[in-house]
Amino acid sequence: PDCTVRSKYCEPHHIVWWQHNGATDLDNLLPLCSRHHHSVHEGGWQLAMRPDRSLTITYPNGEQRITGPPSMARAQ
Image (cartoon, rainbow, N blue to C red; front, side, top):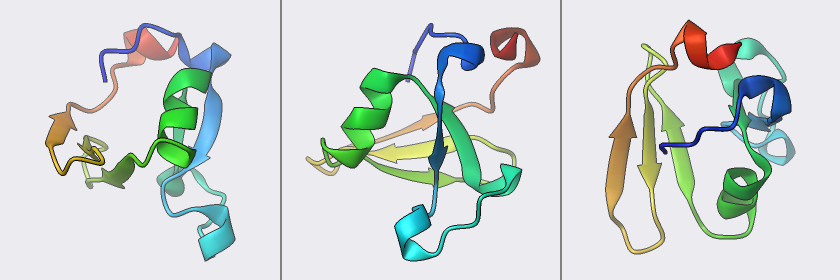
């Protein structure tokens, strides 16, 4: 959320984790900066992608945040 790291410096994250048989395709991948990637894998964040590519983030305390779909300007 509110990350300013450009996609080309991010790591691909499997929404449905690879170890849980998540596909390695664009529908299941999301670019995350290293800090946010660690927040998912080690910090207990849960991510759910919506059909419009907006993202629901559920934090360990149960709070949820929905982010809008990514813009092409941020991807460059």
